[in-house]
Length: 459
Image (cartoon, rainbow, N blue to C red; front, side, top):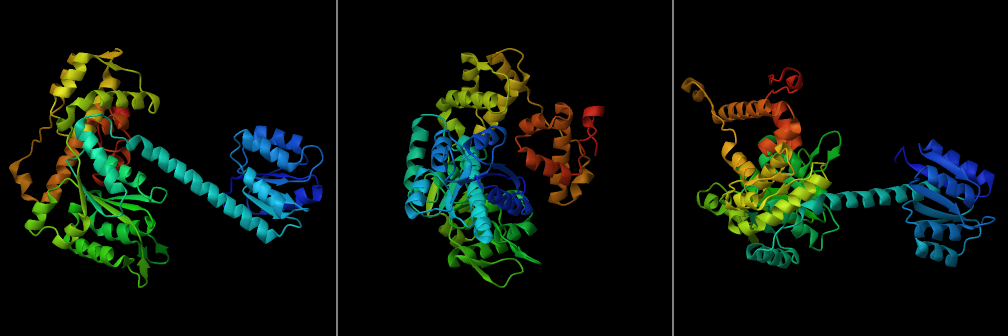
């Protein structure tokens, strides 16, 4: 139960108010009481109770009238009606008007607590769905009206209506994640779970636990279990090693699996969408990826086009990015001149939409005037810092992982210096999400705490 949930008890009988208040307070709730409609209205102006227990028969304004008043005013509290003179007709009317449930007096403590707990769970699920939709909404739009995107939208609509598994291919930053969200949002599973697992960002030893969960002292569900009934996105599936490819294929074919360390088979029903920026078919031909797994994932293929193939959409994309930066992130308003837009449209964009978004944000931040000119854009396109790694050839004798970590450390330290330790600017410069950026810095032993004071990165 939520300890900080406020509950309002409205009843004209003081003993009833006191008993219910004591029971709920013992459960950890913050309780408020009112003996009539006037006192209840006053409480509602001071707190926003998650739940209201409302007596139907009260002197003055009765509970049904007060229920109508609150529902009509947009009240979001879960209202549970209570009455010692309840009838089926009264209960049906209360539910029809918007009440969550109906309890009869004398109240059973067990029934009261079960109903309150169920109401809280319903509210929690509703809030999670709203949060999910708010998170998905900005990222579930293909901005632009080019023929390229029109064809892509048509394919998404056709494929979303089925329950087949889909393989989404395309270059990094082209919008594969947006396509996955659209496929889920327009499917019959839209109201169920949407779980993404980035296989390329996880250490190989942790992927099995992330996928299948584990059983130690207690059971921990993995992504397959969490997505049950909904959609599971396997991001960068080409990064799976051969052993995990085999385990995943077995789970997908049997629609069941064992948690790591577990002996009980777990059944699941998910719609799988896999993504990759690698030439998966070529990897199959070279024996680097299982052909049977590829065939199962590739029931319906979608290729997300690179930005350079629909440059006409760049104007609409920039407009949308500026609006989001201003309205949702608090950046100052900036207007791109026609020349600036022409410069952006003529660029190759190897990093696709993600690179364009980083460029737009960077120009908004560094621009000192409201209008961003073609010279501003050209300066950023041609003047982006180049990383030069000065290494003694003897340092290249180690394994590939050590060499990669050394490059990543040098790269991040370089941009930390340029951004003065500002993590927001660093995220924009590197094109990494802040959460992933913090994890990456920690794994590389980079301490950013002293940078703002000293102006120098510290490791």
